[in-house]
Amino acid sequence: MSDVVHDSLTTNQIDKIKKIQSTFAEVYPVSLEETITNFKRDQNPDSEIDIWLQMAEAYEKYLTSKQIKLDLNTKKEVYKLILSRSMMSDEEAISNSKLTILTEKEAKEVLSYYSATPDPIDVVKKP
Image 1 (tube, one colour):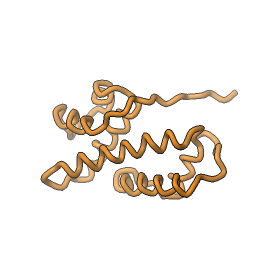
Image 2 (spheres, rainbow, N blue to C red):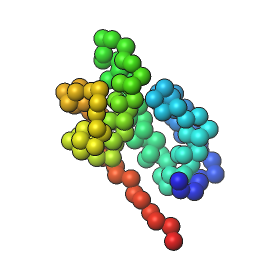
Image 3 (cartoon, rainbow, N blue to C red):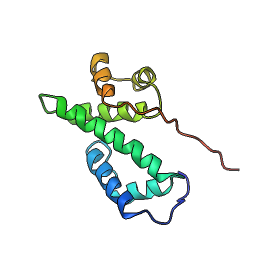
Image 4 (cartoon, rainbow, N blue to C red):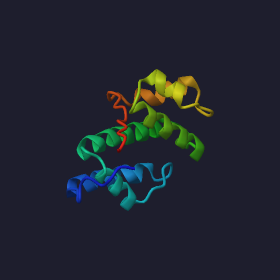
């Protein structure tokens, strides 16, 4: 975990973070307070918020597209796949996610809802 970079975030940023947190609460149960703190750790929170909003949109679109309600494990796999895709190509995300529930065809459908450019995580070692 990196240190908190921003002491506060704007009301607009907090509103967007609330949307992100509520969208993923079932599959990534982290409190709103912790989610806000995590975004305060980002050098550029607006950029990171935008990525997560795109992920949330893709997640919601996929779930809405299904005729049946998906179980929690399937939703978790969809989330994990979209999270991976935010950092890498479709092919890499499918390969690295080690899917056990979604078929490759379903995984490609999930990813069809997410079109943002991959944004790999930068790892910085502290001295």
